[in-house]
Length: 314
Picture (cartoon, rainbow, N blue to C red):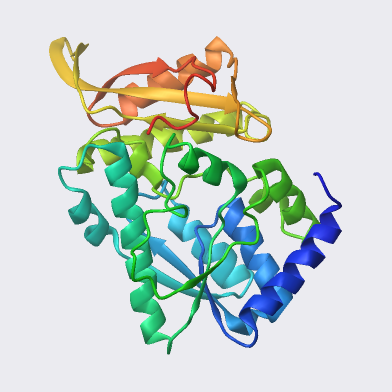
């Protein structure tokens, strides 16, 4: 980290207090490292009673993700957690939308609208905290891709943004999380994009492919953990494209979706190298996916580094 971690934390605590004063702050709490570190900073700066954490299930979460967020933040850490199941609302908005940037903007805008509605119920909260980090800003300004927390916000947004991590890279955010006393399971949690599985269900989001992404991703994460790769590989996930391919199932011709596996290592998320996974592990994952995930008959492994590819496909 370019500056002393504790000095950065102290600086941000002072900045938050100066910006927010005695007001409450609404926090988009996905459960990922960025929003978790923001939550810890806010609580340290203004106290938990002034931090209202909202977890929105947009129907694009990984398997068991929302349940885990509720358990960790609501039951264990006793945060002021509001859970909103808006999955049908998001999926309806995404029907027929195949352009990646349009999908991201729809999801980002809908997020802010959900927060705005909830804020009115909470008697006029003026501040919205976000886990924006420096790579998000760089990629958005360079038009590599839009981020839900950088642009795509309604012009009439009633919130003033609080973004204490916007000068940091992901590895620096993790350092802050450790210094703030967050558990390692939270600090080293798998990165997850704001639009969630919406950008891993390639093209227009359909319920069958979304479920295929969710189930195949759960298998991948389980097998990586069993193989001792959970803490060694920076990010790994599955994608399902919007086309089918021919195969053979039960001695008959099948016409089903492929699943693509991506696993990368990086320090700052600006560049990334491919993880060389042992064949036996990939073979087991492949066999499980094609036998356990409905509508899937082929598994591929993405070997593209960043650049030329980005970490996510969309």
